[in-house]
Image (cartoon, rainbow, N blue to C red; front, side):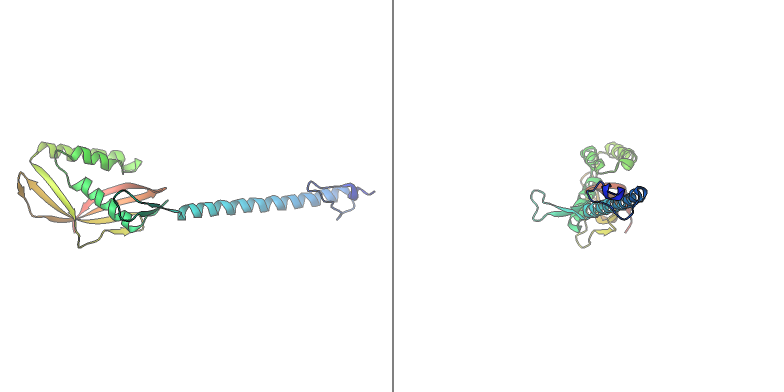
Length: 200
């Protein structure tokens, strides 16, 4: 029996293209390299599809006492979610007094990204000290109901707010501002990266 007929590959079939042994080994090596290449390409494609599907996946969250839920993905969310969290940020940041500033700013700091946390903690400390130095001064904030929160590219939002300064029992005229919030969604978690007040 010829050497080519005795040669059996790892996959259980006989390669008879070449009469000599070296030719058969060379042919099998080419086939194995081709199969390995195809397997590698298949793994790359599967990894790509997993990443795409993970990015597109959204979860429906229905908080207590809410009529409808929020759709939240790895790097995006629906407008109702941004509206709700934007109103919460405005309340925690702008509606403050000497009595509640520490608690509100502590809650707000939990929403900040790791990179910006320390920077804004120092800013909030200064605001708290100012409020506690003048205990008869406080601020009330409410969202402009005739204007909507605008969101751009799932990275920034502007919240139209009316601020009223309270001195003792006296109210000053309300001032309109926009609260600008820079943020990103990190695997479905909302994280603030920047926060500032803008004139309308």
